[in-house]
Length: 264
Image 1 (tube, one colour):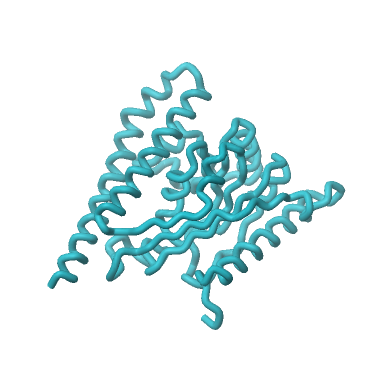
Image 2 (tube, helix red, strand yellow; image 1 turned 180 degrees about the vertical axis):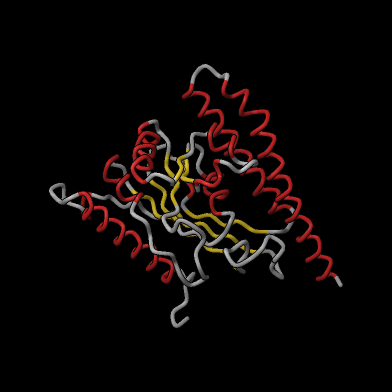
């Protein structure tokens, strides 16, 4: 009986978190965004908005932990708080990945799907925070480089969407590699794991696991692009080499940490 009550409570708490998330996003788009447009200084406006988002996501994760829905375990978070701009490249097993990384990174910009720019709950947020759309490959790189030059770390999920299965990744796109080569900043690999799986591409929000899920975030040592792509190498080939190397390293680490299982 207690197990059923616990499951029911976590289902209710999960549903309420989505309602709060959606309502706050809608209120931001309808109220905060119009006020932010009147802010005379674009740079300070973006800084204020990204700070609000950072603290809101920290509060959301804390609420989910306090409600018994999830546990969050983080290793190496100090690297995300260092303030030095980098390209944060992570695998993407769950819907909460971007929430976790924005909560852990005070000065962060992220790449979002083009569909979010017309989503009633998100359009104001992505515009006010000056997030980067993935619609135009050339504009994508230019926008990311501009944000890095302004002191923000870029959070990029090179799979493009949530991973297709617990033991597989989508092939990485090369946008992050072109950006790293253009901006001359390091790539910071991050491993994300969720046990038991929750909020995956195959699951709806109401598919709550039988027990609280543990979300693990491991921030790894940075990868410099210079050893992977000599300066005289054509840009297309250089980006291909960087993409292949980073994808291989993240995949290998997922096996090394036991997040991926051999033979599956």
